[in-house]
Image (cartoon, rainbow, N blue to C red):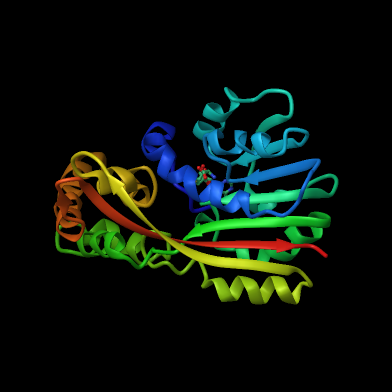
Amino acid sequence: MISPTWDPTLYLRFADERARPFADLVSRIAVPAPARVVDLGCGPGNVTATLLDRWSQARVLGVDSSPEMIEEAAALARPGLEFVQGEIETWAPGEPVDVIVSNAALQWVPSHLELLPRWVAALAPGGALALQMPTNAGGGAARVFRTVATGPRFADRLTAVAESGRPSASGGIVRPAAEYVDVLARLGCRVDAWDTTYQHVLPGDDPVLAWYEGTGLRPYLEALEPERREEFRAEVAAGLRTAFPRRPYGTVLPFTRTFVIAYRI
Ligand SMILES: C[S@@+](CC[C@H](N)C(=O)[O-])C[C@H]1O[C@@H](n2cnc3c(N)ncnc32)[C@H](O)[C@@H]1O
């Protein structure tokens, strides 16, 4: 597993912006009344809980490997909504599932393309596999992380992270939308896929740093000795201020995401 330690509080600082793609994905799932719904990589559970707004009769299960995230999510559990700690890679349902959702999680799972056949087989006929992954890993913020990480002050510890194919580093884990269409259509699914670039307008000082501290910057920070983290953060913050200048109304962070919904026929 390559996912770092998660901090639900940091992650939830941009809860609205992070919930939007989940809502956009779920609104497009054409399964009228699913009985069983699973959210793989459910995180703190706040967006998982909204699945019951859409499908009030469903039994919803959130699965996540992070004990910190599952502890946060557990507070939201109620009849029809459960959370369990578990790995996406080994998850397998005991009975067919009507909807499998995975939002902003598979960029941490390098083997996810190989897992698609197993997930399609786990669907009931007419069921849907709905995925959303960030695809802007090669964008401005990632370039800043890489430049600082491979520069003279941090290369000793961070070159390996920058080159490891982690989400913020190379973007190699999330594939172009066409590749998911190809794999899933060959499995016999009807596929609906698209990319969307959100223009997030973020308030406050260094909001892009704050955004990535909750996600893609974590592998770098964790690889550094604690006493060097502040220096790294400061250098990254300076680079991000240049790449994403503050305007009178806020800081614009363009963020591209890939959406894929595959229906088992
Ligand atoms: C960016 S968060 C997304 C959380 C939630 N789906 C949302 O949309 O807000 C990614 C989540 O994926 C989880 N994750 C990463 N790799 C995982 C794995 N191999 N198995 C299970 N969960 C994983 C992390 O623990 C984290 O909670």
